[in-house]
Image (tube, helix red, strand yellow):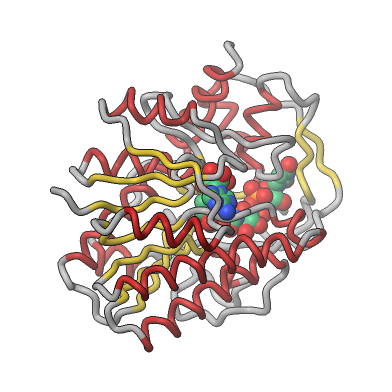
Length: 342
Ligand code: NAD
Ligand code: WQD
């Protein structure tokens, strides 16, 4: 097969796991990444798992000329899985323009280069459950209304989807699937790749594993007075490899011309909600480590509960999340131990 898929942000957390699945399914990929939140060591991990060294180009997608050059130099591209973006919600509140420039600017440049090609092109977009805000009904279906974004980061996902929808209407050669991820966690079973947060993690699971590894003295649990069974917030934690596999299925759907519309949206989650305390207890069970944690005030902007109705992805894509919370947390812990030499 000579046609290639561009994987932007392919050295990042979800991008690296998806690159592995794509290679294992026989796709040829080109990874582009500016290394703003990753490193080239990830390439080694991908090679160890797959036996393939994917082509890698260090490139900043905010540079329009470089994006155009990339497409000029690779006329064999048939599609893209676009992971590259900034993703820190709190940071986006303080630096909104950086987020709009990267997450929206890069998307526009890519779409312009794709349009210039004038050929059929398949596009998978990394969206997020954050577009739903606090949904009125649980589990959350793709029909749930999009709520006003709580952060510039969340807004970039809403705007990104709108842009893609609009472009599929003007350019019928463009096929898009927007995947709304719930909470991705865990790492590859080989323990060759995993999540590598830079600085202090904001997300629950990397904070848990780092606390268990002794990097933080304790984990703060943000509030236990929410209207949930145990008072802590509920989320849908999905194993990153399950998530990665959904990209391959989605891409094949576009290649096979099976879409019902040129712009489709799918929720990707397990369909099950777990509270923060449940995550802690499950982590303690699978790791054998007793976690030092304390209940503190609520974190501003947190929603009470979110978990996916995955029936559309189950039925239409034939995709199901296979790994449960125990497996997800175990792989997260194995990875943490490996990178800390524990
Ligand atoms: P990540 O930061 O690990 O990966 C993103 C990669 O993109 C990084 O390697 C980074 O260096 C690269 N990148 C960023 N800006 C770039 C640019 N201008 N040019 C080239 N490369 C650039 O993040 P992730 O967790 O793998 O997330 C991937 C995508 O999924 C993002 O779009 C994110 O918004 C979305 N998403 C993530 C989550 C989550 O909880 N991790 C949830 C929902 C959606
Ligand atoms: C999960 C739960 C916290 C850290 C974020 C983004 C969202 C999406 C997924 C990209 C919450 C609690 C956390 C800690 C805690 N990303 N918690 N102590 O908030 O669901 O979503 O990631 O699109 O846009 O906002 O995930 O992992 O930060 O938090 O008690 O130290 O863990 O309050 O209930 P969240 P999270």
